[in-house]
Length: 471
Image 1 (tube, rainbow, N blue to C red):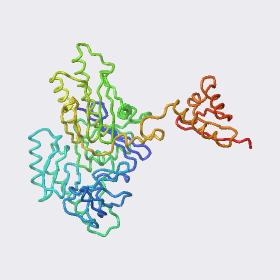
Image 2: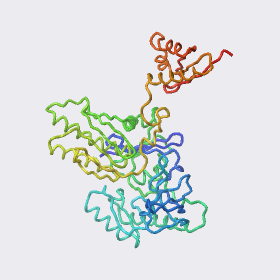
Image 3: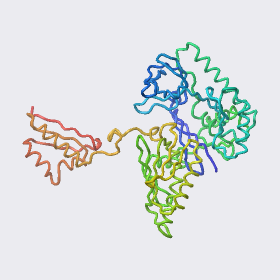
Image 4: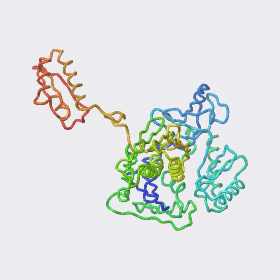
């Protein structure tokens, strides 16, 4: 599998795309690294403990207190205690950030877990012999009562490289502990690096990976940072200097547009419909334009197989977390159902975020869960529509015209000479009616002179009704 890491910088905004087999599968955007608090470590103060909720609220210097599950605290805590916490989930909407006392520090090859006592190996490393080798090294070099996880990029690397990475992490952990014990006024103990460094540290693997950038400064920085991370292999860095933007040139804007749409078309002509709610994501699979060539079961199977692969990509790109319900096209043959599940499972293996595929339910729906990590792609790129308030639907022109008519009728009861309406031309057409019939009826009903003006500068949902007097 060929992979590209695409990095584009414009106006202090960094966007990174991970491309596999010419398809965008992951997208990251950082406008200001100081605003990002995910994985930050703080010296927090317990504000209140709620045993009935099994939770506590911790002041970490933010506008809203952080939420801590007592099960994650690892010890009994009480109001007023100072505790070390790490942000596990950033604030979303009206909810403050979620924190944990299970600290983890990421390095190039290892993740250090100071308060745990176990060794793990990334599930992305498939070779059993390599997994056993890396676990043996990690068990041997980790300090007593300290946990480590071997990262995917450690595959094929030596004991000396892992030891060097662990030494750096232990030095960082010592610095954090000293700052926690000090009387520093700042609650921030540790902040991870910016997006570019994190991507190079966490994602870059020399084999079959090309980095594409659109500035010479970024090219030089990447070469320097990879050297600092101990990368000795030849690094493939392409410098793009075309007229159109890098993401547009590579066709990644279209992938982003698909990921922001409720409807995603498949190559075969079928399509997927995504409906995101706060609790879960539902996905409906449809044959669409695809009519097949043999018979109905074959057409359904081919559509579902292609849908399974696309769904795995979309979950990863949209960064969906929580419960996912998939309504595949009905299949009567158990072998076909098994084939679709196998395709979905195989496609999900490329996702570094943990997923749990539960299979078909009694209703014939496929259920899976995906761990919530960063914000949804839609929350990164979009805001709620100011006109529909996030509902996705607005009042029709005809409904708005009746709303305006009711307001005219109410205002006409006052001591006024005339009424003026200003609204979008499409709405004005309904208010006036065919040949002015609605307007004449309103004037007869109210006994007032009414003028209606179409204004193209107004959005459809906006209108202004005011009263006028001869004075």
